[in-house]
Length: 260
Image (cartoon, rainbow, N blue to C red; front, side, top):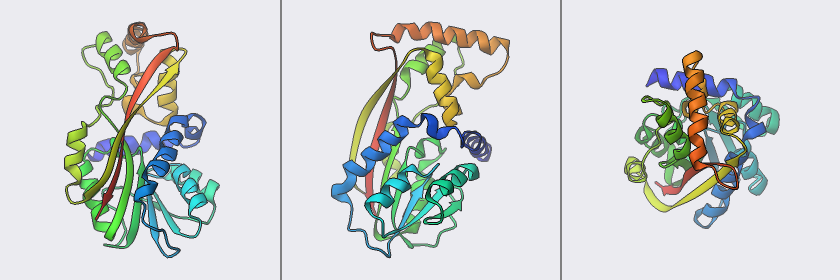
Protein backbone atom coordinates (compact mmCIF):
# COMPACT_ATOMS: atom_id res chain seq x y z
CA UNK A 1 0.00 0.00 0.00
CA UNK A 2 2.83 2.40 0.87
CA UNK A 3 4.56 1.60 -2.44
CA UNK A 4 1.33 2.27 -4.37
CA UNK A 5 0.88 5.67 -2.74
CA UNK A 6 4.48 6.59 -3.49
CA UNK A 7 3.88 5.63 -7.12
CA UNK A 8 0.75 7.79 -7.25
CA UNK A 9 2.62 10.65 -5.58
CA UNK A 10 5.40 10.49 -8.18
CA UNK A 11 2.97 10.33 -11.09
CA UNK A 12 0.97 13.38 -10.06
CA UNK A 13 4.06 15.28 -9.01
CA UNK A 14 5.51 14.86 -12.49
CA UNK A 15 2.21 15.94 -14.05
CA UNK A 16 1.73 19.08 -11.94
CA UNK A 17 2.77 21.57 -14.64
CA UNK A 18 0.88 19.82 -17.45
CA UNK A 19 -2.28 18.76 -15.59
CA UNK A 20 -4.37 21.87 -16.27
CA UNK A 21 -3.73 21.73 -20.01
CA UNK A 22 -5.89 18.61 -20.39
CA UNK A 23 -8.09 18.53 -17.25
CA UNK A 24 -11.31 19.51 -19.04
CA UNK A 25 -13.28 16.49 -17.84
CA UNK A 26 -12.01 16.92 -14.27
CA UNK A 27 -13.16 20.54 -14.26
CA UNK A 28 -16.58 19.61 -15.61
CA UNK A 29 -17.05 17.07 -12.83
CA UNK A 30 -15.94 19.59 -10.18
CA UNK A 31 -18.45 22.11 -11.51
CA UNK A 32 -21.18 19.47 -11.47
CA UNK A 33 -20.29 18.53 -7.89
CA UNK A 34 -20.92 22.10 -6.74
CA UNK A 35 -24.11 22.41 -8.77
CA UNK A 36 -25.73 19.06 -7.98
CA UNK A 37 -25.05 19.09 -4.24
CA UNK A 38 -26.04 22.69 -3.45
CA UNK A 39 -29.53 21.67 -2.21
CA UNK A 40 -27.80 19.70 0.57
CA UNK A 41 -25.20 22.32 1.45
CA UNK A 42 -25.64 23.77 4.93
CA UNK A 43 -25.22 27.57 5.13
CA UNK A 44 -21.53 28.49 4.97
CA UNK A 45 -20.36 30.96 7.61
CA UNK A 46 -17.17 33.02 7.57
CA UNK A 47 -15.62 31.04 10.43
CA UNK A 48 -16.29 27.66 8.79
CA UNK A 49 -13.37 25.42 7.88
CA UNK A 50 -13.66 23.73 4.49
CA UNK A 51 -11.22 21.08 3.28
CA UNK A 52 -10.49 20.36 -0.39
CA UNK A 53 -9.11 16.84 -0.12
CA UNK A 54 -6.93 15.95 -3.07
CA UNK A 55 -7.05 19.55 -4.24
CA UNK A 56 -4.56 19.08 -7.07
CA UNK A 57 -3.90 22.40 -8.78
CA UNK A 58 -6.72 24.07 -6.86
CA UNK A 59 -9.56 24.28 -9.38
CA UNK A 60 -12.34 23.14 -7.02
CA UNK A 61 -11.07 25.40 -4.24
CA UNK A 62 -11.10 28.33 -6.67
CA UNK A 63 -14.71 27.68 -7.65
CA UNK A 64 -15.79 27.34 -4.03
CA UNK A 65 -14.08 30.57 -3.06
CA UNK A 66 -15.83 32.40 -5.88
CA UNK A 67 -19.23 31.25 -4.62
CA UNK A 68 -18.50 31.45 -0.90
CA UNK A 69 -15.64 33.97 -0.59
CA UNK A 70 -15.78 34.59 3.15
CA UNK A 71 -15.21 31.04 4.37
CA UNK A 72 -11.86 29.48 5.23
CA UNK A 73 -10.34 26.85 2.92
CA UNK A 74 -7.60 24.30 3.35
CA UNK A 75 -6.21 22.47 0.31
CA UNK A 76 -4.70 19.03 0.94
CA UNK A 77 -2.75 16.97 -1.58
CA UNK A 78 -0.22 14.16 -1.52
CA UNK A 79 1.86 15.71 -4.32
CA UNK A 80 3.72 18.84 -3.27
CA UNK A 81 4.21 20.12 -6.86
CA UNK A 82 0.42 20.08 -7.26
CA UNK A 83 0.09 22.25 -4.16
CA UNK A 84 2.71 24.63 -5.53
CA UNK A 85 0.63 25.03 -8.70
CA UNK A 86 -2.45 25.72 -6.57
CA UNK A 87 -0.56 28.34 -4.56
CA UNK A 88 0.32 30.14 -7.77
CA UNK A 89 -3.40 30.34 -8.57
CA UNK A 90 -4.81 31.26 -5.18
CA UNK A 91 -1.74 32.97 -3.70
CA UNK A 92 -2.03 33.42 0.09
CA UNK A 93 -5.81 33.21 0.38
CA UNK A 94 -5.87 29.50 1.23
CA UNK A 95 -3.95 27.26 3.63
CA UNK A 96 -2.16 24.28 2.13
CA UNK A 97 -1.21 20.91 3.59
CA UNK A 98 1.00 18.34 1.91
CA UNK A 99 -0.38 15.12 3.40
CA UNK A 100 -1.79 11.65 2.86
CA UNK A 101 -5.61 11.64 2.85
CA UNK A 102 -5.56 8.62 5.15
CA UNK A 103 -3.36 10.32 7.77
CA UNK A 104 -4.35 13.98 7.99
CA UNK A 105 -2.50 16.31 10.39
CA UNK A 106 -5.85 17.89 11.28
CA UNK A 107 -7.43 17.84 14.77
CA UNK A 108 -10.50 15.77 15.57
CA UNK A 109 -13.87 17.40 14.85
CA UNK A 110 -12.33 20.63 13.57
CA UNK A 111 -13.79 20.87 10.04
CA UNK A 112 -17.25 21.82 8.83
CA UNK A 113 -17.02 20.37 5.32
CA UNK A 114 -14.82 18.16 3.22
CA UNK A 115 -14.92 18.48 -0.55
CA UNK A 116 -13.15 15.98 -2.77
CA UNK A 117 -13.42 15.53 -6.53
CA UNK A 118 -11.98 12.61 -8.50
CA UNK A 119 -9.37 11.71 -5.90
CA UNK A 120 -10.75 8.71 -4.04
CA UNK A 121 -10.31 6.30 -6.96
CA UNK A 122 -6.53 6.51 -6.54
CA UNK A 123 -6.60 5.33 -2.93
CA UNK A 124 -6.15 1.65 -2.05
CA UNK A 125 -8.70 1.66 0.81
CA UNK A 126 -11.56 4.17 0.72
CA UNK A 127 -12.92 2.91 4.04
CA UNK A 128 -9.80 4.21 5.77
CA UNK A 129 -10.18 7.54 3.99
CA UNK A 130 -13.82 7.90 5.00
CA UNK A 131 -12.91 7.02 8.59
CA UNK A 132 -10.37 9.86 8.51
CA UNK A 133 -12.98 12.23 7.06
CA UNK A 134 -15.36 11.18 9.84
CA UNK A 135 -12.66 11.91 12.42
CA UNK A 136 -11.96 15.49 11.29
CA UNK A 137 -15.58 16.51 10.68
CA UNK A 138 -17.52 18.30 13.37
CA UNK A 139 -20.83 16.70 14.41
CA UNK A 140 -23.25 17.55 11.63
CA UNK A 141 -20.36 18.23 9.23
CA UNK A 142 -20.67 17.20 5.61
CA UNK A 143 -18.59 15.51 2.93
CA UNK A 144 -19.20 16.29 -0.75
CA UNK A 145 -17.33 14.03 -3.13
CA UNK A 146 -17.03 12.51 -6.57
CA UNK A 147 -15.08 9.44 -7.57
CA UNK A 148 -14.75 7.14 -10.56
CA UNK A 149 -16.44 3.77 -10.26
CA UNK A 150 -16.80 0.73 -12.50
CA UNK A 151 -17.31 0.72 -15.43
CA UNK A 152 -14.78 3.44 -16.24
CA UNK A 153 -12.62 3.32 -19.37
CA UNK A 154 -14.08 -0.09 -20.29
CA UNK A 155 -13.11 0.43 -23.93
CA UNK A 156 -9.45 0.91 -23.03
CA UNK A 157 -9.51 -2.05 -20.62
CA UNK A 158 -11.06 -4.34 -23.23
CA UNK A 159 -8.73 -3.18 -25.99
CA UNK A 160 -5.73 -3.84 -23.76
CA UNK A 161 -7.05 -7.20 -22.57
CA UNK A 162 -7.46 -8.32 -26.19
CA UNK A 163 -3.84 -7.36 -26.84
CA UNK A 164 -2.32 -9.06 -23.78
CA UNK A 165 -3.33 -11.55 -21.12
CA UNK A 166 -2.07 -9.16 -18.43
CA UNK A 167 -3.39 -5.62 -18.76
CA UNK A 168 -2.40 -2.74 -16.46
CA UNK A 169 -5.49 -0.54 -16.63
CA UNK A 170 -6.93 0.85 -13.40
CA UNK A 171 -9.44 -1.37 -11.62
CA UNK A 172 -12.28 0.85 -10.41
CA UNK A 173 -14.45 0.13 -7.38
CA UNK A 174 -18.01 -1.16 -7.72
CA UNK A 175 -20.87 1.11 -6.61
CA UNK A 176 -22.10 -1.15 -3.79
CA UNK A 177 -18.57 -1.74 -2.52
CA UNK A 178 -17.98 2.01 -2.35
CA UNK A 179 -21.21 2.65 -0.45
CA UNK A 180 -20.20 0.04 2.14
CA UNK A 181 -16.96 1.90 2.91
CA UNK A 182 -18.51 5.03 4.42
CA UNK A 183 -20.66 3.23 6.98
CA UNK A 184 -19.76 5.75 9.73
CA UNK A 185 -21.30 8.61 7.74
CA UNK A 186 -24.96 9.14 6.89
CA UNK A 187 -25.74 9.24 3.18
CA UNK A 188 -27.79 12.31 2.29
CA UNK A 189 -27.53 12.01 -1.47
CA UNK A 190 -25.89 10.00 -4.21
CA UNK A 191 -26.07 10.08 -7.97
CA UNK A 192 -24.30 8.29 -10.79
CA UNK A 193 -23.53 9.96 -14.10
CA UNK A 194 -21.88 8.64 -17.22
CA UNK A 195 -19.63 10.82 -19.35
CA UNK A 196 -18.22 9.86 -22.73
CA UNK A 197 -15.34 11.71 -24.35
CA UNK A 198 -14.34 11.11 -27.96
CA UNK A 199 -10.86 11.15 -29.46
CA UNK A 200 -9.47 11.20 -32.99
CA UNK A 201 -7.10 8.35 -32.08
CA UNK A 202 -6.62 6.02 -29.09
CA UNK A 203 -3.14 7.49 -28.57
CA UNK A 204 -4.80 10.86 -27.86
CA UNK A 205 -6.57 9.29 -24.87
CA UNK A 206 -3.38 7.59 -23.69
CA UNK A 207 -1.45 10.86 -24.00
CA UNK A 208 -4.14 12.67 -22.00
CA UNK A 209 -4.01 10.12 -19.19
CA UNK A 210 -0.24 10.39 -19.05
CA UNK A 211 -0.38 14.20 -19.03
CA UNK A 212 -2.87 14.07 -16.15
CA UNK A 213 -0.58 11.77 -14.17
CA UNK A 214 -3.22 9.03 -14.31
CA UNK A 215 -0.59 6.41 -15.03
CA UNK A 216 -2.40 3.59 -13.25
CA UNK A 217 -4.96 3.80 -16.06
CA UNK A 218 -2.35 4.27 -18.75
CA UNK A 219 -0.96 1.28 -20.67
CA UNK A 220 1.66 3.52 -22.31
CA UNK A 221 3.69 3.58 -19.11
CA UNK A 222 5.21 0.18 -19.93
CA UNK A 223 8.62 0.34 -21.56
CA UNK A 224 10.36 -1.75 -24.17
CA UNK A 225 9.81 -3.12 -27.65
CA UNK A 226 7.35 -5.78 -26.52
CA UNK A 227 5.20 -3.17 -24.77
CA UNK A 228 5.31 -0.98 -27.88
CA UNK A 229 4.01 -3.91 -29.92
CA UNK A 230 1.24 -4.46 -27.41
CA UNK A 231 0.35 -0.77 -27.57
CA UNK A 232 -0.03 -1.08 -31.33
CA UNK A 233 -2.37 -3.99 -30.64
CA UNK A 234 -4.35 -1.89 -28.19
CA UNK A 235 -4.89 0.80 -30.82
CA UNK A 236 -5.95 -1.82 -33.36
CA UNK A 237 -8.41 -3.39 -30.93
CA UNK A 238 -9.87 0.02 -30.08
CA UNK A 239 -11.23 0.10 -33.64
CA UNK A 240 -14.09 -2.13 -32.40
CA UNK A 241 -15.44 0.82 -30.40
CA UNK A 242 -15.03 3.56 -32.98
CA UNK A 243 -18.13 5.36 -34.24
CA UNK A 244 -18.93 8.50 -36.24
CA UNK A 245 -17.86 10.68 -33.30
CA UNK A 246 -14.49 9.03 -32.90
CA UNK A 247 -12.97 6.71 -30.31
CA UNK A 248 -15.03 6.75 -27.09
CA UNK A 249 -13.74 6.80 -23.51
CA UNK A 250 -16.48 6.26 -20.96
CA UNK A 251 -16.30 7.45 -17.37
CA UNK A 252 -18.77 6.53 -14.62
CA UNK A 253 -18.81 9.16 -11.87
CA UNK A 254 -20.29 8.73 -8.41
CA UNK A 255 -21.54 11.91 -6.70
CA UNK A 256 -22.14 11.70 -2.96
CA UNK A 257 -23.11 13.83 0.03
CA UNK A 258 -22.42 12.39 3.49
CA UNK A 259 -23.04 13.81 6.96
CA UNK A 260 -21.58 13.04 10.34
